[in-house]
Amino acid sequence: MKEKAKSKKKSRIRLLHQYYNYTGFYSFVWKSIKKAILPIVLFVGALWAIDRYLLDIEEMLVTITQTYAPLEVLSIFFLSESLLGLVPPELFIAWAGKSVSPILFLTLLATASYLGGIVSYWIGVGITKIPAVHEAMELKMAKHIKNTRKWGGFLIIVGALLPIPFAMTSIAAGIIRFPFSSYLIFGLLRFARFYLYALVIFEMV
Image 1: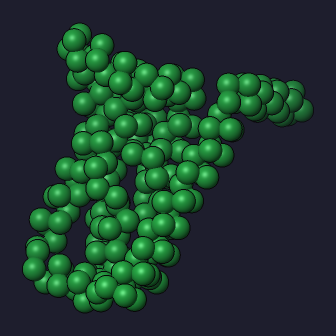
Image 2: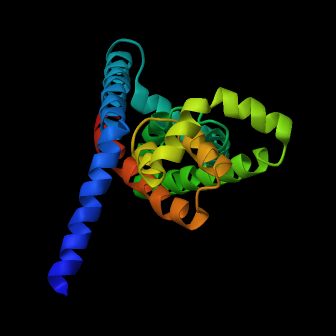
């Protein structure tokens, strides 16, 4: 019985591998990783150049933490993460690095991003109830929606970990009515992204 169970499990894994390979999931992930590397390198390079030649970034971030209340910064970030991810999270991660409690504020940022994704998911669900808006978004996000239908949870994982606007992935998940409980589980990887990026950014600032 155990051997049969193992055989079935292997067959399932093999079939999944064949499916993702055939539908281009692996090439999509590789392209996304390559696209992700460039923004990270550019951001780190720009951070170094600005700090060296233009202004003291550390002093600037300290000034921001002293000028604006943490709740204000977190609220702006939450709105950004709920509405198409308009502001790069890396800027806020750098801000957290100069706060009174970097790990605490980094965790709050990750939580705000996660909750923003949930808001985006329900925006996607709401869009399906407005025919005119639904049709417009189906056209505008056709590629995203198509990929989410094909790869489901794996695309949410990629969206959570890589510098792809997480809100877009979340809206697409809501539009196709991806199971909400599964979305919540896969979206938790958003926390991993913030902690991993902080390892680099905290050292820079």
